[in-house]
Length: 299
Image (cartoon, rainbow, N blue to C red; front, top):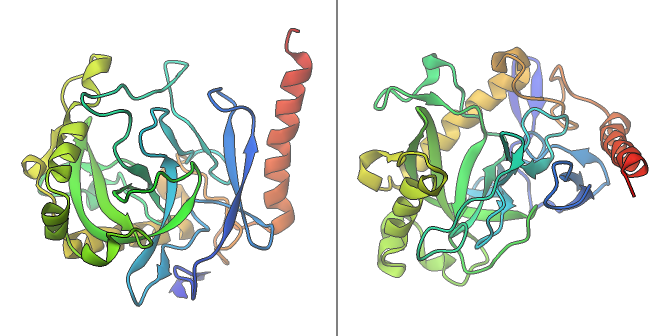
């Protein structure tokens, strides 16, 4: 456990924890949400309650899969809704889909988030080399294994390195990782191993992040270091720093100026910790709202 003033939480598990998802609404609609329950049936936040580490000694982390490989719907942990369900991103009132970038189809990896991390937008914690501040989200992670994981899956990954995308003036780390159960995982231990065993893949990743907004009429993104990936040690330091900022956020939710819902069911001592009944009531309220909408929709 970690102690931060009065705050106590676990950022690691003795063995991989199991989670189930609770879907509300219909996919490809504005109302679709994916909530999480732990093995005890308690509603949990994928942002705050799923531990950072699955096995800290072996540096195995948890990853929340938001977007399966080859798919286009831009799904993400909703940081401003209670219990932080996954939902589809919306721009100008419309559901967001990422365009295909030749020769790829959709996202070229399983894409998701590392729980219990926060890219703090406060300039005091910005990245000095680029002069940019955090994007106010959990860390993004690209899982490069061969399995196409289900949307909402919680998987265990080995960290290999990181790219740095400067996205609309914000620091946006893109951590590179591989599922520990992937056949190639034993051979990939650092970023140079990816170059050897998967030649061209990191270059494709760089080009994807550079160009993926161009079909929507936006300029090319800036990928720092000309797309070079920093190694595992560098990436683990980024993860450590963003986890420390998340710890600070949980102790003092006002640090996000209300942009992040910090309601959780496991971070004991945090101002926004709730019991299992309250957590369940949040999901139930979404279910009732959805039923009400169906009842009032035109036939």
